[in-house]
Every structure is written in structure tokens, then in C-alpha cells.
Image 1 (tube, rainbow, N blue to C red):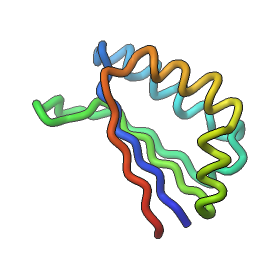
Image 2 (image 1 turned 90 degrees about the vertical axis):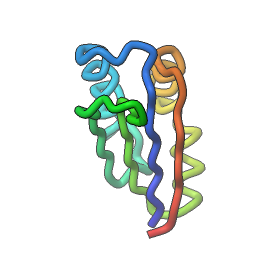
Image 3 (image 1 turned 180 degrees about the vertical axis):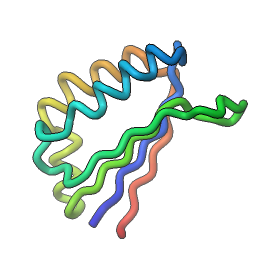
Image 4 (image 1 turned 90 degrees about the horizontal axis):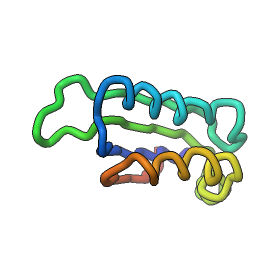
Length: 96
């Protein structure tokens, strides 16, 4: 199993923008078949080192991660939105 984790810093980290963005990330459930589990969280501390949103996706293997990265819904809806609202992101992918 693979865990794909991405933390996003948004240009506008208002509660409404964070909730809208979290909903778009959550919309992958049932639409991206290689994603076995999707978790999305919104930061509540807002410390200097905080990122605003975390996405955690569980996938079967590296091949499934490649498919996820190229999935049409992920690319055309989710990535498109994220690139328009994020200031920066960091990611880690590891095997469980």
C-alpha cells in the first residue's frame, strides 16, 4: 500500500475558501477509482508553520499512484482548481 500526502498553503485561507477547496478534494471519492481511501483536513491552528489543507490518499501500489496522478478527474477538475488557489504545496509518498 502507498500513502500519498499533500499539504497545501492557499492564497486565500479564509474558512469559506478552505471549505470550498476541501470539498473539491473530497469530490474525488467515487470518481478516482485507484484511490482506496481519501482523507481531507483543514488546519485550525493557523500557526506560522501551518499549511491550510491536507490531502491523504491511500493507493494499492506505485502503479495505482501513477494512474491516480494521471486520472482525468484528478487532472481536469482537482489539479486545475488546486493550481488556481494554492500558493505552494509539499508532498510525501511512502509505502505502508
